[in-house]
Image (cartoon, rainbow, N blue to C red; front, top):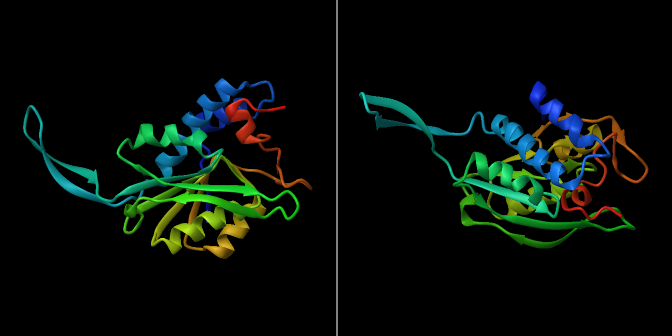
Length: 207
C-alpha cells in the first residue's frame, strides 16, 4: 500500500525540489525537510509504552517509543535522506544496502549490505528518494527479511504506479510513504515528471 503525504508544506517544498534550476545545496536541504515530514507520518503507529515523568509541577503519564528503529538507506541516493530521519529520531540505528542498476538488464545488483542486529524485532525504515521501477526496493526488502527483519516500511520522496505495484506484489505487508505518486516511467525508466537523477542532484554530480 502506498500512502501519499499531501500536506501543503510538503507539496510546496517538493515544487521547489522538482525545479531544474534548484541547485544541489538547496536540493539536499529540501530532501532533508521533506523526509522529516514523510517519516513523521510513516512512524505514526510505531509501538509506544507508558512512562511516568516528573515535571516541575507533578508526575505525568507519557508515551515513549518502545521499539528499536533502524534506518536503511539504499546507496547512494538514500544517504541524502538520512539526516532528515536522524534529526527526527536521533537514537535510530543505521544499516546500509548498496545497489546499482545494470545498464543492460536494468536490474538491481547488490554490492554491499550491513545491518545492525536490532532489525530483528525492530522497525526498519528503507529510504530512497526515488522509488521508480521498484526493483531496488524489492531487493532491499528481500535482504532485510532474509536477515530477520519483520516490520518494514519504505519512505521515499517520489514514486510511480509501476514501482508501487512491483513492491506491493512482492511484499504486500510493506507500506510505502511518499510525497508524490507521479504519472509513469519513461523508456529510460525515469519517473515522469519526477526529479531527474536524485543522486546527481543531491551530490552535485550532474553532467
